[in-house]
Amino acid sequence: MAFLEKLNKMAKNIEDKTGDALEISKHTAQKAKEEAAHREDLRKIGKFYYDFYLAGGQIEAGIMEVMESAKAHADAVAQAQAAIDGIRDENALEKAEKLAAKEAQAEAAAEEAVQEVAEETENITEEPVAQEAEPPQPEAEIAQPQPEEIGQPVPTERICPVCGNRVEAGVKFCGECGNKMEV
Image (tube, rainbow, N blue to C red; front, side):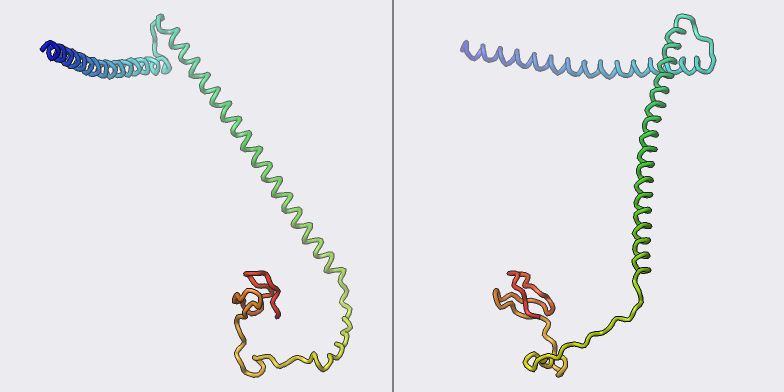
């Protein structure tokens, strides 16, 4: 029986501690929410008086030092942002200048290439080229009539003699094994 009573007391103790932990968590969350709202209200009050100060309103001497410090910080923020913007603008300008220089180089290279081609074509003389007579072909090499010449359809593909792969007509090498095809 003592064991059961001890177990009962432990369960009650755990229940009490769990309940307390839940209550503490609930109050902690409520406290954090109220603190955030309090800070926001103080921020609004401060913003109101700071704007009043900037507009030329008369501020009490006790708070004047804080107002001037806040203005000095705001001015420093504006100067830092101006410096950041200046650096970014300078970098953008450098990039634009580099791009313009590359474009100018490409344009100059293109003009130079056009000029070289023009000079080469000027140097070509328009002399008639003497046509050499083709040597007579021996009897054994006389071309046989092609299928299209005798009204038969032209084959559109061939078979590679090495691997048996189908190869389109006019292709010089087999796509499967690389064998040179007869034309």
